Image 1 (cartoon, rainbow, N blue to C red):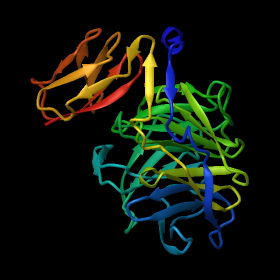
Image 2 (cartoon, helix red, strand yellow; image 1 turned 60 degrees about the horizontal axis):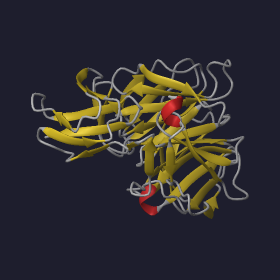
Image 3 (cartoon, rainbow, N blue to C red; image 1 turned 90 degrees about the vertical axis):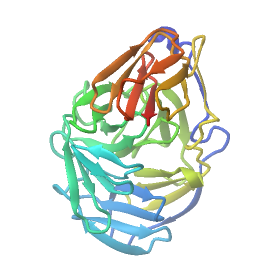
Length: 340
């Protein structure tokens, strides 16, 4: 890993050319301490969770309360709210895009609830194998078709500040790593952005950490003056903004985020250019560049479909049924392949 990491260069993403700036904020009435926030960019709605509350609260972007739905599971302060960024299958159930995803990491391993945002009905629950009663954030990661979860700094030295990739069907851990050398998480959150990177916030840090999905540092993004004690956040990549909440019960809206940038990211691993695939979707054969030392194609159940040889230029899925697949290089890059 160290050999290629020495040649690893990443430029851009959340805003390398511009400082995050405060657009506005609001204080929800009756809320004392916020532990989670999710933003629905389609509906223009901010979802929040009052620590140890019994409801998920929905607001418009001006701070006007709209309605609430029951919070499933036990009352907690180690939690997260997400909005499903795409339709996907969780624990055997098809989850529509726009569904609420509520991560409850209060006790033992984390549970992830998929919830209809209007009725509050729980569509399904994923019981994961990750967590030691302190999972504070998580996100569905579109490129890998997995969940990524993060644990705070309370557990033992080997478990604290640990990120895990979790299978969306079985809840089993695919990979995990610590970020303790980069960042310290108390109350906090983890998000995945459209560029494939992961972002982490913490109530005891004054920046947003950006890492690759395999845990390599990309950069730190300083928070504006006056924005502190951050416990939850979410992106509106289309509007280039970020929504955050803190343990004092304040919701913040920040500008100058470029989390949807793909063309602004330049990645080099030693002498190899970043992995690229075209056409994608494809009916049978995918052209690839930058495979490097090889890769493996998996189906969405985690079963190996085929191995890609070093420096291969074609991936032939002619014999495989139509659907989604995951291409993972030995360097850890992940691309979703769609075969029609």
